[in-house]
Image (cartoon, rainbow, N blue to C red):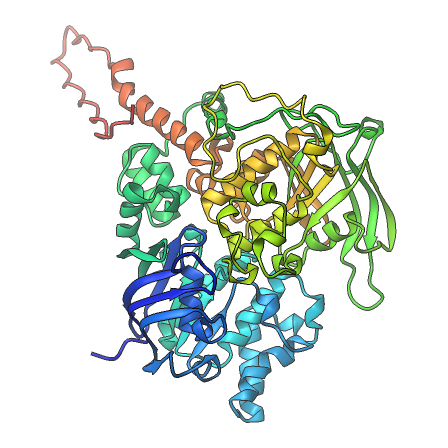
Length: 631
């Protein structure tokens, strides 16, 4: 049997100053040619495992190490990142820190030139990597002009250009649009199958890559909690770690169907065999979904004093047009005929018209390079448009894509006020160095910095238990303005869920809901349809630098192939069901109707004709599928 490419033997690691180990007594082997998916909560040890696999732990981060770790037969204690780079390609959560060259072509060529490849081999490697990742049109672009998703693909291209034996990927699809994300997973699977490249990929959106994996490793608190093939992992997650379930697995589990599906195809096959794809009358299905949609709403809604000039938050999204009107007089933000036309290069934004009302929650979506980040930067005043106008009712706050840009101190406690750290669920990490946090933790820390200054939203901190549904919220009207802090009129977030697990995404959605309740308008750029469906009232879809769709979240995210939640794709967009709760209610109703159909419509007995022989008895209707809906 060949030697494993990656082998941990009772490996334990503790970051400098950390209260406990990030990895504890870890023992596992990854064989040649395996495709392994790392799953687990934020801070569970996934990024640390990948850092150890490329030698950054312990050679860069320092800390205390025990046990053994070998990569392609090289002991990590004796071989640092430079030597391991000959056999390991790595992509981290923050690709902007990995890109070192001025142009995309130079960045892709850099690792090949370092290995002493010939000029022809370098040119071929650059061309192949660019074509495989769809970045050939970016080869001459300066790297500092790229969007986050484009930068992520460039960094991955540099990691793959040298055809390493082992590829370590930390949230590689976090900044990619749905199409680019699916293409990336397909490329990795092809490299794995045709080149024999071993792939170890950490990801929170498991539904994107579970079908490509041979094996899933789940980490919890630095300990290996599960090592199984994808189907068995989902069965384990249903019992032991519900937060790691995919939306599709949660959908079928709530509907009382087994086994948990690995992908959309498997889910639809289970529904088809149960007869749950047969629709009810359209009005009936819409009523079922609407009735259960409230079960997914956040329970910790808090009524806060509105910001000055804020209108009451609408319970449902108003009808919007791209063009403003007199009805927008009290808007929190109004954009008119906004153009961004760089002197050198293509037009980025074209005649953008956008209006946000106080307390409105809007998701901004679109493919990589569509202009989302550029639009947010202009709204916050970081850049000036070529022409057009931006009018805001007050301060416009912005959280940029790269959380590292906000981290300037040696300890987490010095980055943000204590209340803001507690709200972000980072109070226990106050003594840690910010750079030692996981990507999701750094993202939450950056948000705490942006919302700092003594901000107190009056709701439970991240990780706190919410009040029961229907319970009265504690009034905040008596809170002094100083306790509430200086809430912005508009808060713009650029890919805020990068590196976050589902639990922390839900906590972020609750935080955004409380901000909206206080009158702050929210504009969140995201590639995550599940997150958009969890918080947004409205979705604005950018294409070629302008809004091409603008409407209620169910209208935009229910019927598509890519800009759609997994529940919507499984159910074909039926009744606008976007989440497992409302989707499962629809499935149970369909199953109940199917089971009740024979009893409701018995076939009448036929009297024999007087002069004829009795007609043969009609065949009995088929028995319903023995699937019991959960009580």
